[in-house]
Image (cartoon, rainbow, N blue to C red; front, side, top):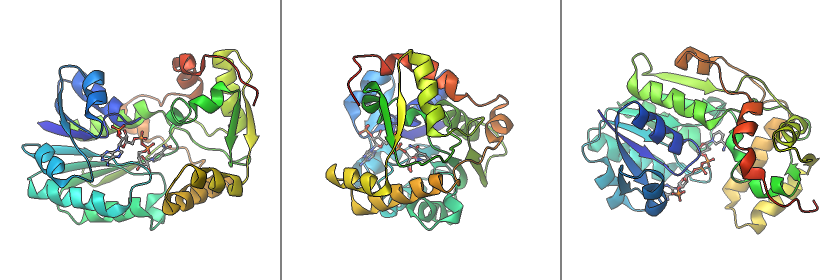
Length: 284
Ligand SMILES: NC(=O)c1ccc[n+]([C@@H]2O[C@H](COP(=O)([O-])OP(=O)(O)OC[C@H]3O[C@@H](n4cnc5c(N)ncnc54)[C@H](OP(=O)(O)O)[C@@H]3O)[C@@H](O)[C@H]2O)c1
């Protein structure tokens, strides 16, 4: 079996590649930034895969049996649906799709893509994870090195999940039986508020990190100033609204059910990534 893995430089995708390789599965790495993937996966078959370049997608899908399909959080549904169509044309029989917790209750692009996959005739599995722990070791890392965590999360709790666990479920679905037509709600072992997140990172690093709640308006202003598309600003604002409303706290046992082991707790994630937050503390 040959699997095309998309977003191999992403938080989950890089782990999907690693874990498939560990199992001896034949992997084609379909990268947006090809050089980065070549460095990360020496010796692997790395090819270009860009949602904006149909020729790259067609070529990447050639001769593949299964597809791990993920896309950036700000991507609309259409380009992803097009890849699903091209995958079917290329004879890909299985699609494991990275979606998000609660997608089934929304009409956002993630659900639109899920519906398209359901109608595609492929064997599908949906991964619907809670918020990734790895957001704190990647996009929020600079902020945390500064000693503060600014989020419009109020005192809402979130069942953060480690990307390594999401990848483990993806790999089980790609390589095992009984996952076709299944949607997994993938969470960590407990729901934490942002004070507890800051405390866990403080504990792992030995430095003071504190949570500073910001308003929805501040989030929107910051995202717009960073050039985020309006649809993505709206999506993130709604997602944080759900956190403040207590709707991101659901804890499931899907990691254990699918992989046979418990999900990684936040304290372990923080210990494993403590080096990322090392460096000079700036005034927050
Ligand atoms: N983050 C969370 O907490 C969370 C929670 C639940 C669900 N999700 C969902 O999970 C998915 C991924 O999340 P994320 O945004 O956090 O991902 P991410 O780890 O930032 O990865 C996104 C990847 O998309 C790749 N990419 C960018 N433009 C591309 C293009 N034109 N063609 C192909 N690949 C492209 C990037 O590749 P390069 O690095 O090579 O440029 C990057 O590695 C999203 O659908 C999101 O809604 C996220």
